[in-house]
Image (cartoon, rainbow, N blue to C red; front, side, top):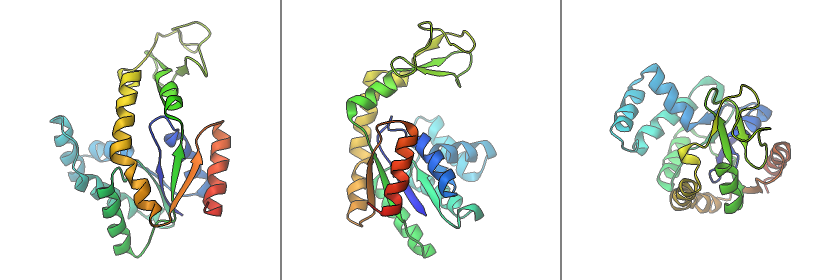
Length: 217
């Protein structure tokens, strides 16, 4: 299957993308991973992207699209892929359509993860991360540490990242509504959108997604 995964920050896209890709046996193609890999390998695209990032500018769509094209042409993506973080706007969606048409292939579905805005804010703003080891993550409501502000694993200090503050989260949501959400209508016009609730346990959401993708509803 060839799938695009969309949803607001905090909807659990990263978690579900990893799980779905494994279940469907297709590569998970994340924009963030693409940028890191190209910059780490010092590819021409990576150097170009880094020059924009170092200057504090957004990486142009054409650079992102070129990275995605290169990744989708790898052998492991011949049977399908799951795109996470791309396309990020209608312009990128149109470019992706053109790219796939050139290759004689098309998307099978656009999976839209829905979550109430207040829940999204609660999920992200409640995150607390260990200063000693960022892999140790807690949540003020859903998985609180035994001792407030102290990591259960190593005793390190727990803190809230600046971009996890409520004001920042709401700004990120506004960017999502303005830039990314319109691609849902773009793909809905093509009959590709499958919408599910992102609420509930991780396993429940994964099961819901697989069922929806299989039924096309």
